[in-house]
Length: 284
Ligand code: GLN
Image 1 (tube, rainbow, N blue to C red):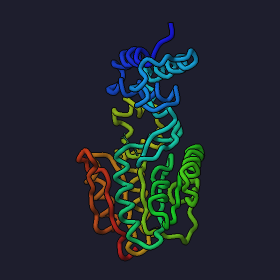
Image 2 (image 1 turned 120 degrees about the horizontal axis):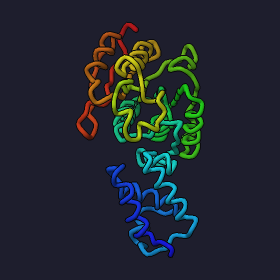
Image 3 (image 1 turned 180 degrees about the vertical axis):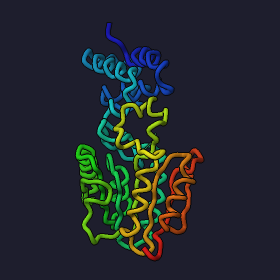
Image 4 (image 1 turned 120 degrees about the vertical axis):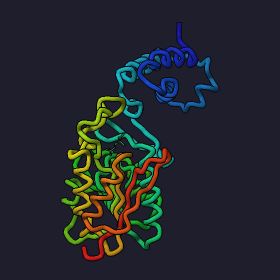
């Protein structure tokens, strides 16, 4: 007997209920993806029968989800700033809190004339691509150490029409031309401590470790960026860094020690101080 959409969803939500807090939503997203429709279609046509091939693919994706594979890696896409980005296990899955970083960066960048922006550790490219699209006169550079991440970022830039982003492969500032300076440097670097138990739970288990984890309580890469960004900023240039919900004080100390001024924390929608911004020290 062929299964209809309603029955398929009910069975899948039940199967996922013990492994996911969002079982019903996960099942809907995966079913919509398999049949090539949106979630509204599932509600409009609950009696639509699944073809054998669709059912097979849906069951396979539910089984993978039940093992913990993130929904975004199963569908290959994740929405960010109302645009659809390709993702795969080579890149971190974009998080809503990173939209705060982008919002602040758009605000800062659009105040300047033809700003030059650098995104460090671009991953899937969500930050660089969104900034390029939101500030069309900006010159956006994006760096990542992972060639496979850069391939995803380049794909996203091309698919979404952000044709001018320059992608470079290398370690933080290493691949940049020696004399180039920026109005704004942004980064969502790895900031999870190697001993953080969250690494053993949920989506984080499947995401690239080098995009998540940093030694010294998760602060090693943030300190590297802070120490090296100064000479790369134009006078009055700004640095904006995403960090863990409990790292704001530590990040402020790092930035203060590195001589930045006007250090400010910014809260995400959950009320966590999630992004810290600062301006270049006058003498650097
Ligand atoms: N926000 C991610 C998390 O803790 C971590 C991202 C990162 O390390 N840049 O779920």
